[in-house]
Length: 83
Image (cartoon, rainbow, N blue to C red; front, side, top):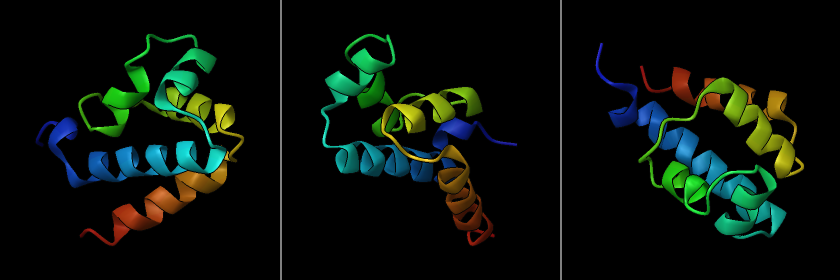
């Protein structure tokens, strides 16, 4: 198994985070602040430089006003199309 940070799945997660942030109308710095993280946290996630675990994905969704269950389902659907 290869490292997940270099996977297409990680790229899809990064894209999903960026789309949610943009729909929420906030900057990456503002979203990082909402999460109590350093100013570059979201930027690194969106650029695929940082792997996001499931708990962090949930918190990011919540901070963007998105339903984590729905976003996770969409990601799983996208993952299954990669096979």
